[in-house]
Image 1: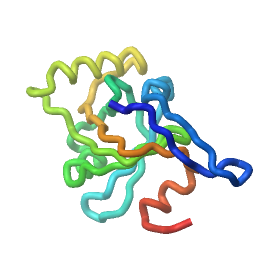
Image 2: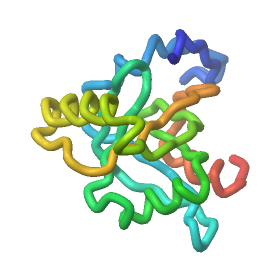
Image 3: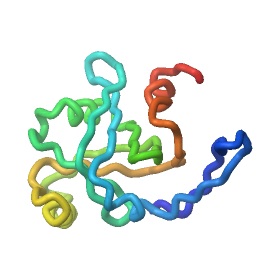
Image 4: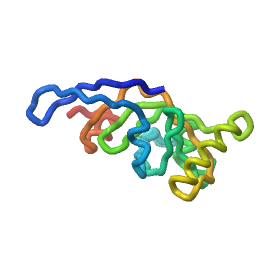
Length: 150
């Protein structure tokens, strides 16, 4: 569960401003998110744009090509990811749902995706553990992942 998160960031006038992110539900109506994984062969950051749904304060993505999707292979090797939705972004952990042990959850999130997008097939991936969520300029995202400083 993502409780209210108060985040400090530079205001437009150069002073520190505070932003509260009440919950992921406030982002649920957005159409896409940007997922950054670490390449399973190269070790480099890999960003994709993908549809998502929110269920019980977690994000769910669907891999159309299932295990063949590069981003799924990346998550299998390293579950640490970064998620960006608009100005909101956070480090997180991803896991591929199991068709047997997660059968009920799989059906629930697939139904939500079918209502939102008219499509809910594919391999579901759950995104959890949001240690912090920051509103940041979009162009700063990859710099941080690559270890550059502003």
